[in-house]
Image (cartoon, rainbow, N blue to C red; front, side, top):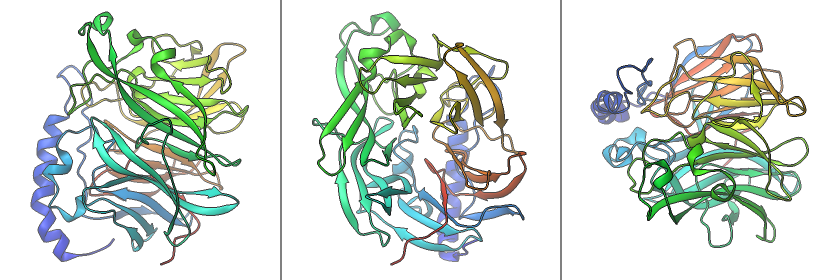
Length: 406
């Protein structure tokens, strides 16, 4: 644990008040259970569990209030609390901070991690500002010391969104972007002359910044597939899709997660055609027993035929159960999806936004619980071997075997 009495004195009252207020604000209807977890936790990075069997290395996460948090006014309400200040943070597993990047005042950071670019290990993150539950900004690539060597946008006049910035081995970047468009929303009970966010997956060549492929949710997914009942918090613009992750399948096509349709799509990277859909209102794969997820994040392949995703199971307004990590075997030829494993937290955490899971080399899994402010590590058998409580949630968390140097 990092102990800082100055931070504790300044932050304790504000964090406690925020915990009470936000716990009420995020509660779903009386018929829904359980309630979302309170999104304000420990006063600092607090290691609660660190057992033999946990992987060595360093934890990468972001502090503060992410642009993906979907809680209007939270950043402003906590602007004077030190623990809510935005930053890219690296901790050792005993709870000592070893590196931090603080963005310029008024800027947020999110999705901080290590990746590989041009054969070298790099630091990457998104930086920008919050707009109605998503972000508008720029993606950054930095060297091992944190010196920025490249910045990138989604291309074609689109700013980079907070949710995804993933580098591929051949020098491409997968980037989410949002754009406001005019739309007829009458099919879902909205105005005929309405406004909504289309959400776009961009594939960009990093070296040349050339856009190689773009996929628009509005052009491929019916508006009536949405599971969102209202506009984005803090915004009058409707958000029926809310793309939050892009990855590659084993054939090089795009795996796209959309929170507000509660579905994962496998998209042909050449034609844009949806090859198959997992979950949502019109799943093309029959869902076997236990394959139940909603408002999910971070869907990616973990092996040749298994999808791993973070199942929020809650939007804050609607909660279907506790959050979990699910491993789902997909068989598009047989049109079938089968549950392999479902990992919950012993405290039955419910994350109303954000979250991710990372497969580790030794077979363990690191889980960032999004707005339920914990980072955990589990063995293959499901044993909890590492657990941290955070002041605020982190959009994603990662474990790496190296730390940046000054």
